[in-house]
Length: 310
Image (cartoon, rainbow, N blue to C red; front, side, top):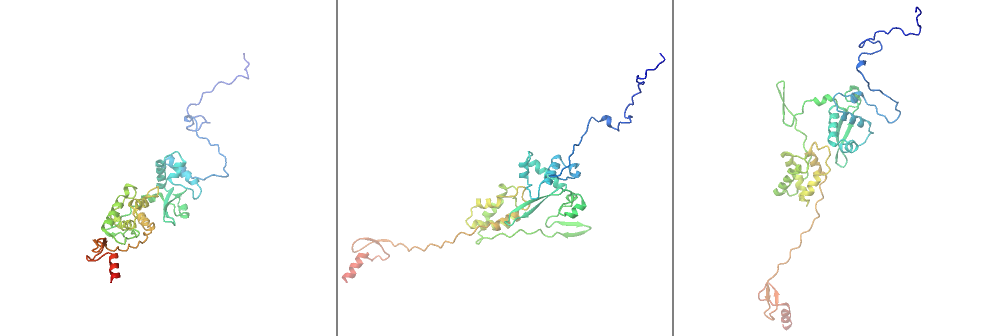
């Protein structure tokens, strides 16, 4: 009875309650799991994306994913809304909203360029570090997101008042010149004005002001003067518009009116005037009907007989 069993376990110790266990980190008692990474090093076909985009606090998940996709595309790849909507299950409306988010935070900008053929196209530029001052110095095209908070640019004739001074803004850039008709008849100019005023019913982005309509009306009249139907003029002005909309519709229409002006119709010489028709008369010699302006004249046969008799 006095011999102790060396294999008997020692007496149980009191369990440490709460987070006082030496092998337990603070807050581990409330965790049931977490994200684990099984990473392998990429050697080909990979894109480096900053956490400022992947973990952006204000961008939506769709905008973050779309920004990552744009940064992974090669140079010159199509990145318009129609192409992206065909590539992903999201519709064009959601993709357009995500592009606007990226543009508002400086990860995207869209520039308009005119091709040698005169067509205006939109070029999409993806910026991988829009808020880094060093990267903006290397690529000055990437805008600062704070630039969206810049003051609004006053319109033409708007007066700026600051520190008691009155300054007049310079007038806006004039619209491109348009062709003029050879004979500007009032009815022709009225038909051209009605056609321009009705364009927004066929293309909602082509809403013109009264000043712009008055400037473009002679160009449309020059088309109508060249035997072009109003429907053909309307198609030439509204077809093949940019899918993202037109920023300056009057300038675009002025360029199209001048660049696509059809050739004048071929010259047709006026027909020679026909000789007047004389009234029908009866010959006094043979009572035959013939045309003559002389009431006492005779027909050709009777005149020949009289010459032979003479």
